[in-house]
Image (cartoon, rainbow, N blue to C red):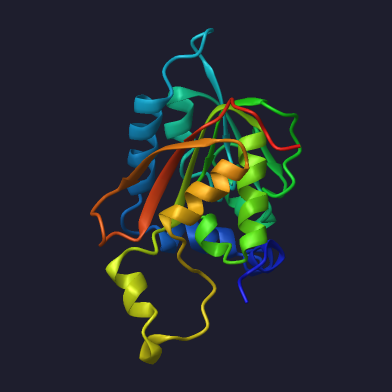
Length: 215
């Protein structure tokens, strides 16, 4: 059975988790995700009418993407982990709030774009994946950027072999599954970004919002 959002939240609530994640988890390749987000926003989110986009980072974790996002517009960060938010607030306590990606506390079409980095590969439960995608699409007027682990990579295929199967807290989604989830939420998938096709697990989907939304 896949991970639910409640299980994911529980794993990141322990005191000190945010400090560890910020200092140790990203001791290498710290700039990889910010570079990718900068590239995708520059390419797919041209200047809004007032020249300044409103951008949601959910979950924002310890705020790794904040500086990059603020280069493109006004930042709001949301995370379910109080430990992560505590670490993020050490740099800048403003514009951060606690909340659940599956129940975002914002009106429809609040933001020009919603960014979700390193969440979807934790949501192996199809219903949890669908809820998270639906909420990201709901609050965005124009674009959603979200990362996931691509089931078409060599590592994903190796992990599916009988001898390497073991319980995991993270998992892979196919591009078809991701495209379907966004389509059912009322968004059009327009691009996939992957550093090395079939090798790099981390993949980004870019989805265009603004069409008809499911009720």
